[in-house]
Amino acid sequence: MGSETELKFRVFEKEPGEIIDAILKDSEVISKETHKLTNEYYDTEDLQLMRSRSGFRVRSTDGIYEETVKTSGRAGGGLATRKEFNVPLSEGKPDLKLFPPEALPFAPEKISAVSESLKKLFSSDVERTSWLVKSASGTSEISLDLGAVRSGNLTDEIREVEVELKDGAEKAIFETAEKIINSGKLTMRTESRSKAQRGYILAGLSSAPEYRDLDAGKFQSSLYETDILRNAYTRYLQAESLLDHDPQGSLKIYRAMWEAMELIESAAGRLMLGDKLGTLPFIQSLSWAGRHRVLEETLAATGNDLCRVRMEELLEEGKNLVHSMRKDPKYLLWQLRMMRWMENPMAFAPGR
Image (cartoon, rainbow, N blue to C red; front, side, top):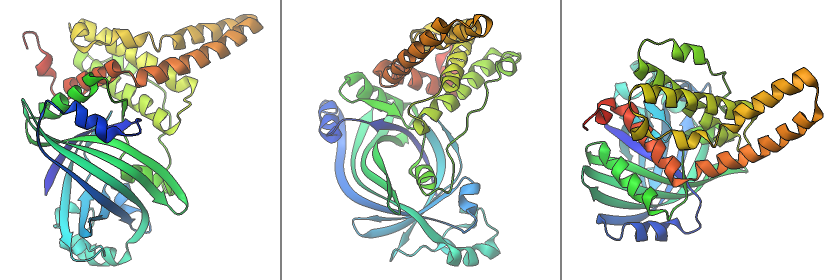
């Protein structure tokens, strides 16, 4: 059993592998490998694994089989930490009996029967190129996955870069990710969805996350500014992640993002973290949602059709602003700073 801590990004360039080679030209690269990975994902008829927030797959790496259980853990905004159990297999048939009992959300006496009842739900096929890289704080593995999740005749393209901690401090994966982002050579966006989550949705076995109203009053009622900042950023990530399932977005999602970011900025200011976190430049990309609300109120009060026209224009302009912001390297760096603060607030204390 091991623990997996990684950052995940979506990439957009046609030849990202060559770009990563160029970015790492002056880095200490320990090794580089390319493999073909075929993953088959299984669950019970009533989706007990999914409902327990676990994932189970059988992987073939260049013809060598392994089965894996990933348990629920911390995840958000592209950063994920979870336990992972791996067992070698002589063939591609799943066998839950090979795992220790703590790996599975079933009573030990039921594992054999559950194993026999598993069915394949979907699969993924990727070409993975991995670079093992040393940085100041430890060793990270950069993995480029190109391929697709498949369910029947449906496919969902995979174009991902993962930065996983291999040894050393968690700071190492942030150092490696920052190097890639600061190069300006690769267009990336944080990816909050696992391949298993994407597969369940593609297979029609799970629905995309639903919008929930932002309860700003709840966040502001805390006695601790750190709680306000933490809760506001968590809510921001929840709203922002909805855009992965609804690329066109909707007004209420954008408005929730804007309201949460306003709370982040105000709480960071009271904690004297404004300069260190650097939220202010990105509020401008979302502040149009506030102007849209004023126009809504004016339209309701006056019935002025000019307000309706301007609202439509503003929404279209706003969508373009948010789309550009999410691909901006500076926005990615802001997200990394927020993730690091969420993991270790003391790293941002005065004098650090």
